[in-house]
Length: 131
Image 1 (cartoon, helix red, strand yellow):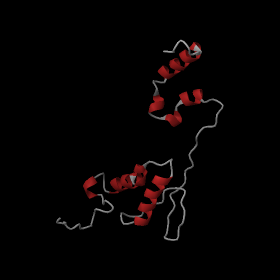
Image 2: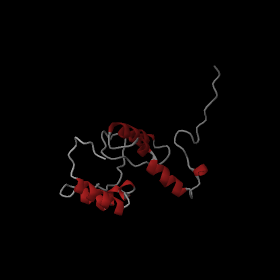
Image 3: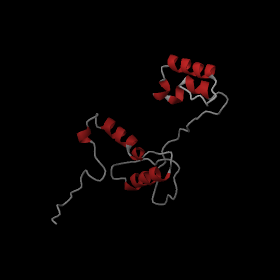
Image 4: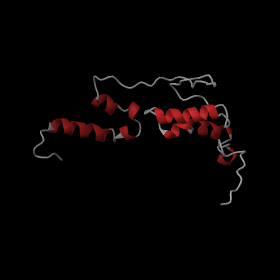
């Protein structure tokens, strides 16, 4: 619905809605491959992610441009660097710090979450503190 003061091309809006209905608004589920985006942004460059392997870092590493590889649940240098990158890089979500590592661990432990080591919790004994 348009306000009376707005000038809108009714046929263009109708065409958009027709295409969206035919595609069942699938752009919500998989935006990268949706023909609706091609229709809407015809003539503009499309996003193409660069696929690169995760870098391995050492204490001598000063900068990273991609999330570093996590070698184990004791890899605090990589885990903390991932956290820092997620907080500094606006393209990252906080969950990116551990999502791929958690999925890989679930696969390695036959999808049994109870067996997956949790960094900072597994194998650490926390004493009780009395106030």
